[in-house]
Image 1 (cartoon, helix red, strand yellow):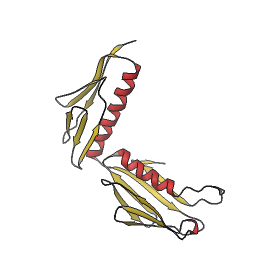
Image 2 (cartoon, helix red, strand yellow):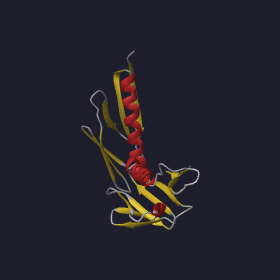
Image 3 (tube, helix red, strand yellow):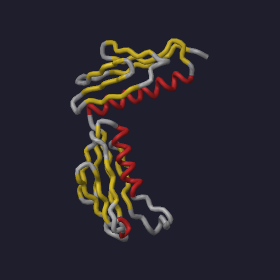
Image 4 (tube, one colour):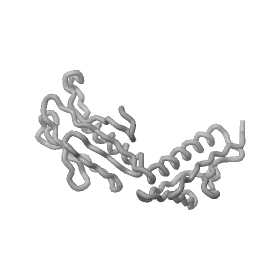
Length: 180
């Protein structure tokens, strides 16, 4: 069944949004966030302080696409207003793990007594701070910040050992302000 479906996104003060064909550019106090979307089956336009996305004859598929794009644009607007922040904690019970920051990578030393350190490179636009046992990841792009936090957690995943005994690793404790 086809319906006329439209969704409006409010643009707050201090944030500018540009729609250039498939590119959405959001700029604010913390920087510029850009992303390309597929608006082939949808119409997108900016009126006053609103972005209107929708279709006159939308099916369930167009509704899903519309809601996804709207959620991404809202996250882009939130990111340029206040950066997304992930906090991770370095936990160990057997061997003392140390994490340090060099250039564009985090180096994890002495994980399970390994001699070769593990390294994670992160893309530009990501701020990483290492303070003893707390690692903080900040970015205006929610997906990049989440990806770097997940990579830090995955690089210390333990396999082929009993998880009840070997509880070492790096674990996410806060996701965008929410306790885990």
